[in-house]
Length: 226
Ligand SMILES: Cc1cc2nc3c(=O)[nH]c(=O)nc-3n(C[C@H](O)[C@H](O)[C@H](O)COP(=O)(O)OP(=O)(O)OC[C@H]3O[C@@H](n4cnc5c(N)ncnc54)[C@H](O)[C@@H]3O)c2cc1C
Image (cartoon, rainbow, N blue to C red):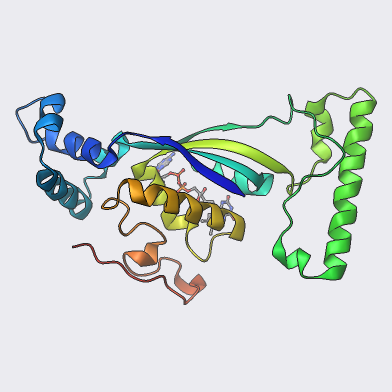
């Protein structure tokens, strides 16, 4: 899996603080942004995070390039509706019969399972190639390709959606591949807005686990905001 932060709103914390401050100030956003000290911005951010005035978090966005992940992962990712996506097409890109797939560790660790997995992948790709060579359009031939297929996707989320995404996908209960993606995205985003991402991550970073009987029983270290 390769994950990179392509770009983000410049000075995201100041952008968020300015938007929040606008609600209560007689000045315009441009003036507020220019005249806001770091100390003032810090106080505004603390108020937002404690009061739940989260709409201000929507004014800063992050765009990530994600390569070498499975279609099983991207199917889960795109369930997050408050985000923008572009994904490598299986209609316009034709794949070679040299299968590029994500191999789950559980399969890799079990010789019999690995052999069955490899056979299924080989058959799927051989059939795909056969269909392409027979003139079947790629958009139809792709129906035989597996969930393990490697793909690339670009995703843009604002900070409010990122925090929600981290809550549910950094959790130990999330599926391992999307869990890894969420942690990589958090590692990349956190240094750009240290205060806003201070307690970002699984729900248990901020409070009790929300998983009830399904809890993993192994909470992340709790972070208490100053
Ligand atoms: C551990 C785990 C297991 C899962 N298992 C399954 C499964 O078995 N089957 C399955 O189908 N899915 C499953 N999911 C996916 C899950 O149901 C959600 O579709 C996915 O996590 C996206 O979350 P979301 O809807 O909260 O967030 P987003 O789409 O990212 O939206 C963020 C928030 O915006 C608000 N929002 C967004 N759209 C609306 C709307 N239309 N109306 C009102 N409020 C809205 C909600 O508050 C929402 O939480 C699973 C997810 C996890 C983390």
